[in-house]
Length: 267
Image (cartoon, rainbow, N blue to C red; front, side, top):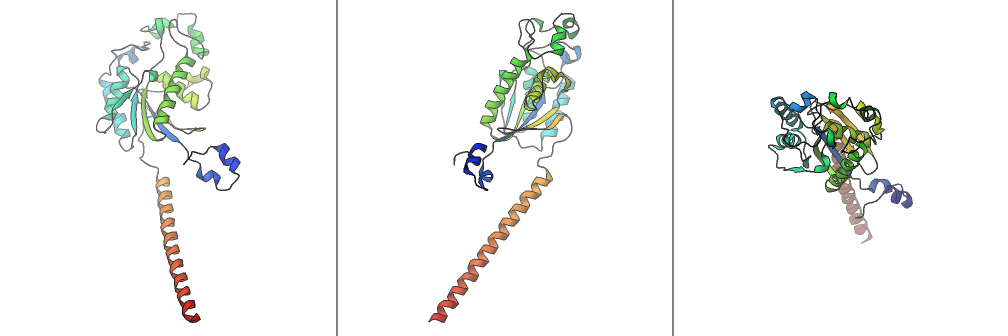
């Protein structure tokens, strides 16, 4: 069956047309990697390799995995950096899923400033622009935030195409997740630093072809497997379907008896 768009439904001009549109809806659970020693030192890691979770980070990742236990996952993706992979592997433990790494899910490329402390970077003239007008401001030798956002969304669209239905975990980085949230909520990227994304927090966004819904942001609470209201609605639909089936059978039985009597009377 061919997928129908909203435009197709309008052209059909039929009251039932919208009911047969096949929607693609992917639920993304964005997890920031758990903490590491660089987070406490407030340094700019960029794409630095060799940064591993510390003891506290392992506990945070375990807690995130525990919160995600009730949720059925289609896939788990992570940036190629160790701090993200280690967090994702803890979430994947006990599930029949392999962590799939993607470079495009990584943090901002900080270029020549990689490894600097935020205090050192703040002495630069362009730091004010990075804080107030980050969209097109580029760190020396690095990338702009709009370039980062573009590669992130491009990768997420590939993931969504691979998983048009169901729930997918994406383990990424603070600024990366902030820019993703800004994109799907149509927020000005210049103001994305108003969003807070804590280590090992969960942010949940449902994405359809022309719509996105933010369900949770920077969350550390439990995630229910399926909302009770949805379960009750499914049960009600199934019960109604069974009733309709029984009524149809009874109707056919009554009709058959009526035809038999009419035939006997004619004889």
